[in-house]
Image 1: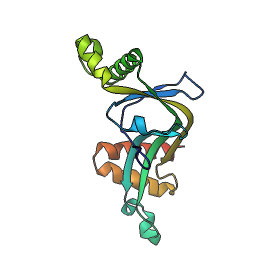
Image 2 (image 1 turned 45 degrees about the vertical axis):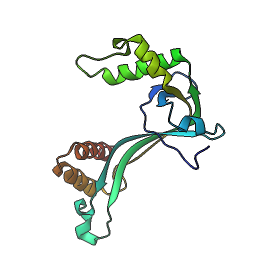
Image 3 (image 1 turned 90 degrees about the horizontal axis):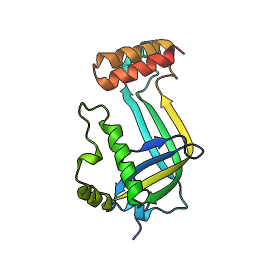
Image 4 (image 1 turned 60 degrees about the horizontal axis):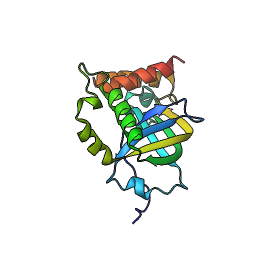
Length: 183
């Protein structure tokens, strides 16, 4: 039975820019995930990579005091990768993919774990429980909104407001607003 409408899965993907015209993205899904069986090949797939994002209060705009013509907004950075989706069941492909994904995630850990640390028969069983995913990218689209539509004084106010929140997300967005202010 096919699912109706869009299906989304949150999975890590690795980007291989030198393969194909715009590169390929690779990851895997649990074999039990219906997305791989329900995908209709005549439709493109979409991978979304979200960057920093944050609410922007109109109280941070100095122009609010001048004319009051302000509203809240949402600042964000995102990349959309569209393309042709295929699924892989070859054990060698899956092992290479799982190893690459693991190595990428473990690289910042003091004593990184690697797939070879687990018993081979255990890994073989785990590989039978997944299906590889490959997205041949046909279109890349980056989008961002970091208060660039506001006058410089309002962007300065946004940076100050975000920094006062003293949160990692606020500091990240304040830095992006600052970068665009200096362009």
